[in-house]
Image 1 (cartoon, rainbow, N blue to C red):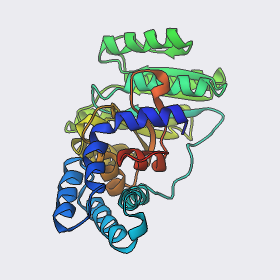
Image 2 (image 1 turned 45 degrees about the vertical axis):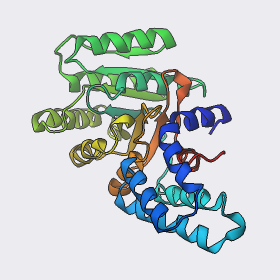
Image 3 (image 1 turned 30 degrees about the vertical axis):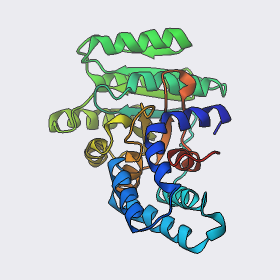
Amino acid sequence: MLGGFFQRLKSGLSRTAEAVSNLLSKPIDAQSAEALRTQLLAADFGPVTTEEIVTATQAAWKNNASARQAGPAEAAAEAIEKALSLPTAPVTTHPSTVIMLLGVNGAGKTTTAAKLSAHWQQQQKKCLFGACDTFRAAAGEQLQAWAGRIGVEVIGGAHGADAAAVAFDAVKAGVARGADYIILDTAGRLHTKSHLLEELRKVVRVTAKALPTAPHEKWLVVDGSLGINSLEQARIFHESVGLTGLIVTKLDGTAKGGALVAIVRELKIPVRFIGVGEKPEDLQPFEARAYARSVVGLSA
């Protein structure tokens, strides 16, 4: 992870890190261990990871007197990194890789689509957008505005058009025009509404008709500031369409920085990208080690 981004990540996670790192700098006795446990749960790390972190920090304090000042924090970072370690392959690469972005309204899907494209354009990759949120006119306009700013072609439809048909056309156009990445920006779905989730499943089915191996990736965009509330969203979307990754946005300034660990832990879905700001460069590929060290206040 780029050095500058690590500093932005560390700054973005400072609200979580300050409370945790203050406790890790003190002797880890029974009282401070309980305080650490309370703080980790408040940061939404989840009970399993919380206990692993507390146990690791207690052992580090007890067994390594020469490293007591930094030992517990290092042990906490290692425990967090281990909790995020999944046997996952890198992002799928095809001549035209189709990526569906899913999530509820307000999570930042459209902005994330633009940031992903900007990231890949730096690698000399060609991107194309499918404006599959046909339910909100403003969504298509927002995507068109971003596309004009960064120079990406958009395939869309009229307001109220069939989202699956737009996805089909976008995939066909992307393949024909040699796009490396075809990013389908889908409509926000309330994860409690089964009929809306069925429409997403239709997009998946129709996309596969346009390109038999598609969609290659189905990434859920979650608002990191919502904390553990994002877990229920992720659970329902995963059951509905089979997610292949998470993108966690809006982590800057949240005190709930541990929630992504809880999601990965339960659903075994890797975090693909992480966002800590509004600029395109504030979305970067996720690195477990950088996150783990940032969230406990350690340097790279």
